[in-house]
Length: 203
Ligand code: GRF
Image (cartoon, rainbow, N blue to C red):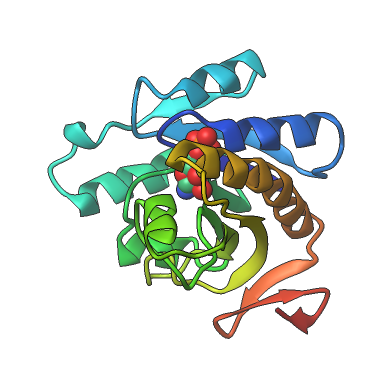
């Protein structure tokens, strides 16, 4: 199974996926990395691992439709079976989502369906929650709304800063994302009828 990772920033989840491929925890091939930001540190991580990269900057395109069409072309040059969104901070058009329907995973730093969108750690703390976490889900046209595959929970402590909590969540992200990507690569995981299925069981 061939997969591409899409990033916009630091790429610590990308690093977790690179490491999992290198030590055999992911039985699949990371064939390319795309960033919409030229300065994303994740590009360096990919290059250090010998993985081809492309940058597709938003500013170079007149519309979201034009951008997503170019993104499809760039991605298809690698013929991926799976797209893995890892901190890719763009909302995708319906045409893009339809093109890769059932072949796209995302990781989101909250226990979905709680806290879709941004600033999830701040919102969980402000709400007085004592549990927070991360979710891996299939991507559908509904932002952060596709079927959930796997979640990891972490505690929120009363003296946490936002950075403390974000770091605690990120550590869990690095554990769960490689697991899920490997399930997909091993064809144990599918999206069907708008639901996620693992080993033939509905999640
Ligand atoms: C992660 O918190 C992920 O859940 C969110 O964006 C962040 C990306 O971090 N979608 P990194 O670039 O993988 O370090």
